[in-house]
Image 1 (spheres, rainbow, N blue to C red):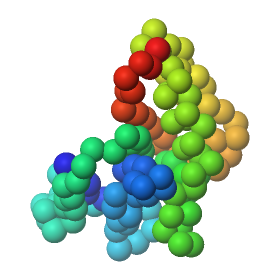
Image 2: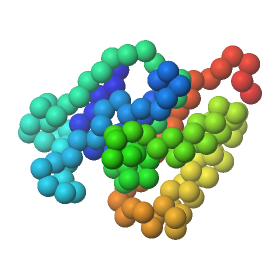
Image 3: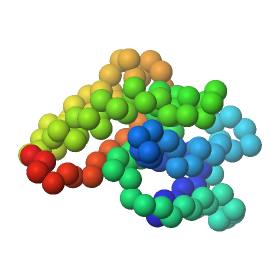
Image 4: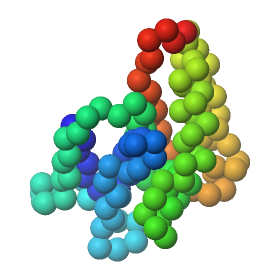
Length: 132
């Protein structure tokens, strides 16, 4: 089950293609959004139930301009694909190192040059039988 209020995004792989579960919802004005604590939050609550994806990413709005293509409301696959591939090849003992690498990437000059907003990214992949 997926649910979302406001901006940020949930990205999943469906039929081999990365897609947003819901397109980020902005408020009436630039840099405005809706929050779960808003009085009218239920009017902006999006819910979807579907099969579990093999890959999922949750991100805050600070990464939207890097990871999404607003012109056609699509996902910028080159942003996510290497990260998902790395996770698929990783072992459980790699988690701390991978988390640190992700933190360094999100704090890098290249990323900071493109956003000054919060940058939170959670990635998950389905473990495969026989994976390390």
